[in-house]
Amino acid sequence: MSNDMQVTKPTKPTLRRSSRVLGSRRSRILAGAATLGLLATACGGSDGVPLTAAPEQVAAADEQAAAPEAGASATIGQSDLGEVLVGSNGLTLYGFTNDVDAASTCSGTCADAWPPVIVDENFAVAPGLDVGIFATTVRDDGQLQLVAGKWPLYFFAGDVVPGDVSGQGSGDVWFVVDPDGSLITEEAGAPAGEAAAVSISAADSELGPILVDGDGLSLYGFTEDANGQPTCNDACADAWPPIVVPTADLPDGLDPAVFSVVQRDDGQFQLSAGVWPLYLFAGDGAPGDINGQGSGDVWFLANPQGGLIQGDQAAAIDAGAEPADDDGY
Image (cartoon, rainbow, N blue to C red; front, side, top):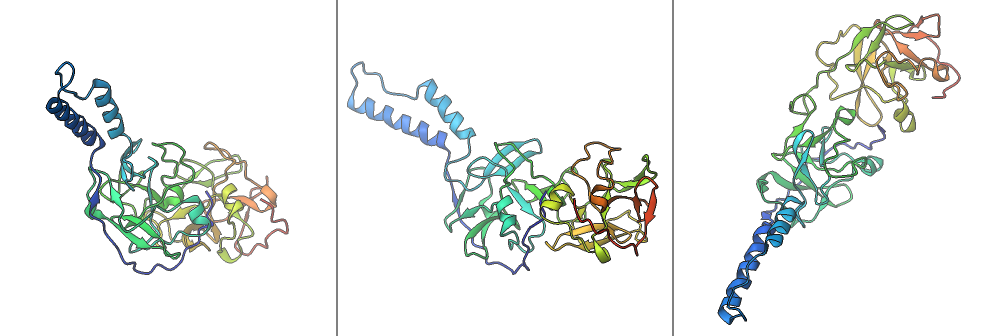
């Protein structure tokens, strides 16, 4: 994922709430059909039989009722993660754990990837949702963004059809939203915004012991990250996704003698081993893959002691090593 999010210091927003809830289309269609029946009875028909809702009308009403409510900025949709909030187009809505006190911090290129749900002050939500949990917050550009609970809502540019949840867990900071306004994490619905468990362990490779993530994928360091500060952003971070953690606190279970947390330029927090911020490689598809080793002579596997493994000799690069001249990735 791209980590070029423009994060600004949040300010406490002014929340505006709406009491509008849309009625059921099915109810309106059936009520309209009943009214026609009464009118036909009163005025008389050629055969004296009143008009009623035909079976196909009822079926159409049911189909419409199952679709996203027209004019509703948020409604309930189904996904592999259960019921989630979806927008008027049926696409999944997300919250961003870096948004503090309901203030949006995703703008610029971040908002290109995660378009905010823009509404007006008379926004409406569909039946079945508690209108009391919804409000709006004013974005930096003056537009109103829909808020559920304490989370400003966003779409994800990578979702194409209703039910897609491609953005779930992205960077460990983007999560789908439950209809009650809370975030759903991949850890069996544990509340987001809390330090999520990060699983880092040692594994054997043909070059010796290396660090791997919870999925068994190899972890790397970038020798251009001088003084432990991450410098892989934008297109680089697409190829080498950083290991992002929710807060500046070291996740439970990791040895502070080896691991630490550093803040990235976009405001997110990245896990480091020794002095090396840790990354995955997009070219590794399965546990045991080390396809990124030696890439550009600047990317090397991380070892359990917090060093990097250089070349076939498996020589550890220490904290004082000079970065290579080639900064390719």
